[in-house]
Image 1 (cartoon, rainbow, N blue to C red):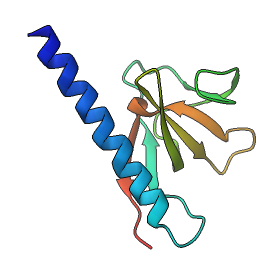
Image 2 (tube, rainbow, N blue to C red):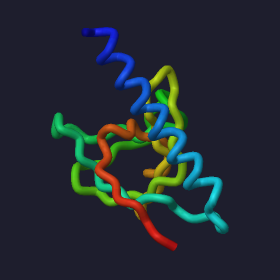
Image 3 (cartoon, one colour):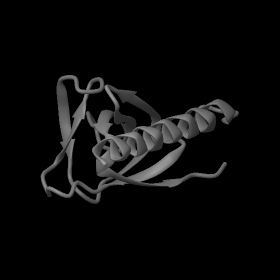
Image 4 (cartoon, rainbow, N blue to C red):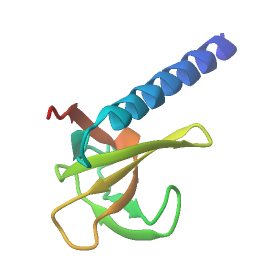
Length: 105
């Protein structure tokens, strides 16, 4: 049962990664692909990092709106490259703590 659950999560992660790559590849201009809101279930600020799992640059509180530019997987975990309107808040965050919706050009 544990193996089946792990396989489903792996497949879901791969499908999400491929979908994100297709969205980025089909964009005819450099634009954000998703509008997201920070929604960390722990209630603590979400760390913004210089690279996936890298040094912390700052933090964002729940409810902060961001734009998602890129989604990558590092050791099977999803990381999102984001920008905000605030200074020093651009970087990488753990994607599972974002609630996102697709932007249409």
